[in-house]
Length: 115
Image (cartoon, rainbow, N blue to C red; front, side, top):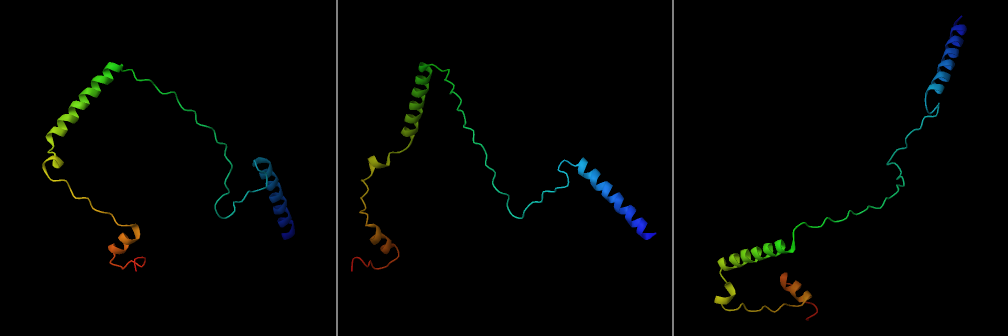
């Protein structure tokens, strides 16, 4: 009696597995993911098409007026600043040292090349 019940259950399981295989799109094969980062898939690179630049709708005279106004603004800005170089004495020029010597002087280390 127990054997009959077990065989009936096994037959039912077999029928259900067949129905599942027919209904699922992959069938009985289940694709499992591997551990780790997925492999890089080659992609097709499409070149970007540059759009044509739109031309300015302002005429050359308009550009020239803007240019002249900007020159006036710069002149007014420069006139408001005091000119430091004209009134004082010129700054003394500092002689730059060679790379290794300057580095050694920065850290108070005697230059081995000079010794």
